[in-house]
Image: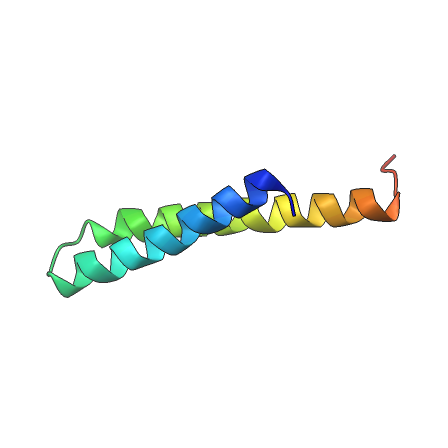
Length: 61
């Protein structure tokens, strides 16, 4: 498992939890946490896909 992918997944989960807590407390700051969760989920997908492609031995270009 790629280390950066795991870190991005942890950030994603923590951002989702922070967004839920923020919205539950009535704060609109949760929107920032939702955006961070979206960004980190895309990073997670990218790093895991890149590692999978490297294991297959596929070359781009």
